[in-house]
Amino acid sequence: MITHTSFFTSRNGKLLLGALLAFCAGPLTAGEKPTTEPPVRAGWVTDFDSAMQSARAEGKDLLLEFTRAKGCGWCIRLEKEVLTQESFQKQVPKDFVLVELEFPRDRELPEELKKQNKRLFRHYGVRTFPYVVLCDASGRPYAGIKYENSNAEDFLKTITSFQKQRNLRDQTLAAAAELEGDAKARMLEKGLSYVDASFHRHYPEVIDAISQADPDDTSGVVAKVRSQQVSAELASLLGPLYKKEKFDEVPASVDQYIDGKKLQGESLQVALVFKTQALYYTKQRTEAMKVAEEILAINDTSHAGRYAKMLVKRIQHLQAKEAAGE
Image 1 (cartoon, helix red, strand yellow):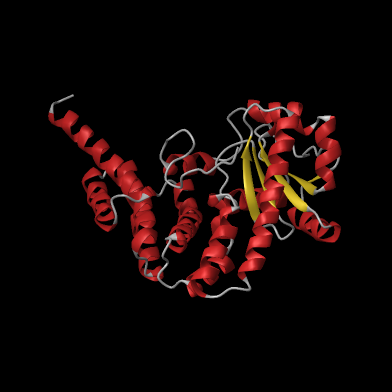
Image 2 (cartoon, rainbow, N blue to C red):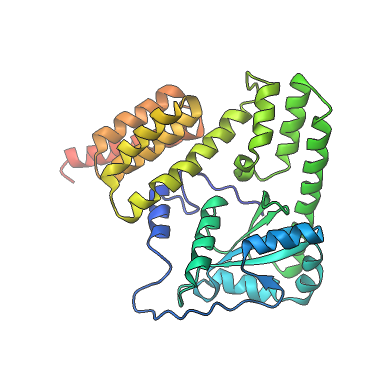
């Protein structure tokens, strides 16, 4: 049930640029007449900051549901088959403050609520609806759940399993505080392993501690997580350009980001992926090929390297078809 979505492709395998474009297009579809009052389920809240305050005061975690409500068949099923079931309503509120983060197609939310939900959508790297994120009271995520046709009982078992993982996270990270050097680094990595890998970038203090304990990054964990952070930062930075369809400005923005951050290794590869996607999208295939080759020269077996190989093959296939007059 854990979801780990690539930061190069969306769930259906399309390029990330397409996913970002879809999000930037906005929640309303043509011909729909928006209303302004968002419905809130009994026992749920919509204000994230207030939810965190309640969670701290009550010693609970946070359960965030990202949903399109009536504009999404799977969202409707999650609502009907899980969230409104008596077993869910009795058990889950004992341990969680429930937060509804809605992106409706049939009405417009109040402006502040819309801004909050969009910020959290990006912050947690959500790519699909419905999606549930489990966080501690500070808002730090530890698990993500994509609804996949399960009933309330199965969903509750999944949540309980993640709660156990969260407790192991806390115990292991606490144990690491008593260690030094390589032993400390390995224990910190073990603690991080109890967290959904797509959320590791939300643990910067743990990553910094691993880096200090193991400057050589023996396991490669630090490089991997820092590349995730680069992906998140670039998605946020480039979002306004995608929204305004200024795709030709993306490569220069990426270059400026790379220079400012002095990126190397896997983090540089990730940034170059954004650049080559924009070049490919604007049909600058020769330039896209050159950037893909830069990615491959750094590491052709990394996630970004595998993506670059795929893109090179795609461009070569298109060039061959054009040469054949097809």
